[in-house]
Length: 156
Image 1: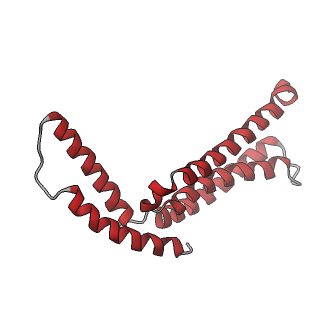
Image 2 (image 1 turned 180 degrees about the vertical axis):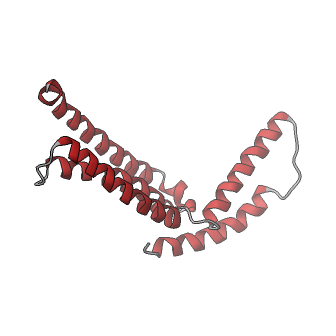
């Protein structure tokens, strides 16, 4: 009862503020670094995060303060049940749209990792055989640009 009278409303307000900040920061990050992120096709990657945060929070709000008039235990159980149904669906959408296997974003990130590893080896005095990052980066950039524009046009 002490919680209900003194803490519950404040905890709900803090939860609202934190979820709102999370969404605002994701939008800001995406907008600020759009030029750098364009090559990895960020549209579905960011919507995956926004979707999980939005669905989780707003569903809780509707169940808690909506017209259902349920007790707290039932709200919690219903919220958990709905999450077990929704999250696999969001995960499938996220994995098929945001991170599909074999797309240019993966090649690009692997190239960046190879570049970082080569720079680290150069700093330590080691060497590694293989094509240069510049040679492979140019072909990946061309294919990434064409497929990214196609991927963003898809409706998943």
